[in-house]
Image 1 (cartoon, rainbow, N blue to C red):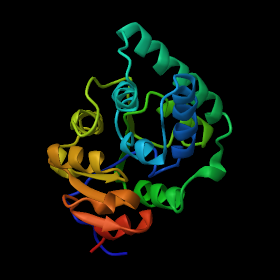
Image 2 (cartoon, rainbow, N blue to C red; image 1 turned 135 degrees about the vertical axis):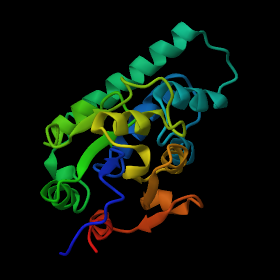
Image 3 (tube, rainbow, N blue to C red; image 1 turned 30 degrees about the horizontal axis):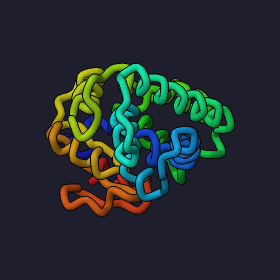
Length: 218
């Protein structure tokens, strides 16, 4: 496989859409909330929620409502949505991993590349446990660790710090445009997969996760 490039010493993975897809679970749980509140909700709106925090997602959903809501009401709605989502997560298993995730992780570990999860989800550790990868990463930064969601770079900067790496030594794998923007704001290499390939700011666009192995060999 040859020698390795020095520049990138760490890879930070977004979770949902890169490691595993729970997008349908999000859709179902937001839809149940929308139905309860008599608000229109569809896949187009759901797509806007990708990569951002739960409360920011709720604000987007409530754009379709003519009512005003208190912070307490909003918090109850977010909790209701999350309860449904967590119940759906119990169906997740290692069989739900996206293609070549394990192969990619094993390659990076074998070549001493540090790896982290950088996700806005507060359910990150629950998801990782369900799919059998809770102990596979050198660092995990999720929605419980941050105050600003993507496109703010906070999640990735904290992940780099936990890996004891400089931001410019890190590569970020993202499937959402907000995540690509966050990676660029963090001064990291932004690798787009799936929906993120539409981004004009991605440094590299890939079709398969294992393609990143090419960046660590001459």
